[in-house]
Image (cartoon, rainbow, N blue to C red):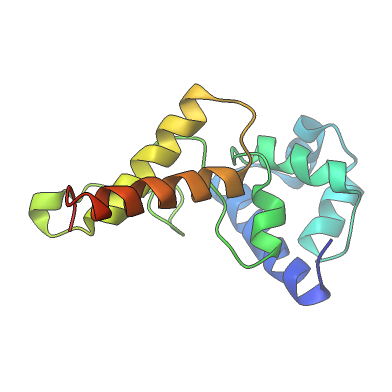
Length: 144
């Protein structure tokens, strides 16, 4: 699935998100339908079966495929609202008028809408869709 360095990155993200959600490891593991030992393996950067990553995505309220994306060096796609990248729970409050990067706002809005309207897109597919829409809007001159 990924190299040990990538799994170490995933371990940090999973533990950070679990703690931000105030979930004990046992509670998170039970919610995912796995043993606490399997969850602990992920948080130690050790490999587990691929199907377990999808279960973790769900518990951490990440789009499907987010664990795999994190292990590949990308950011998870949160399922709850328009969250600032890397700052779980922090709502985006900037607007285009306030000098925010309009393309970044467009990407976050598209990601949020994609998650709300579909249940079959992976985190990477959502990112690709968002990037494509932002690029098309730039090309059309709608956004700078």
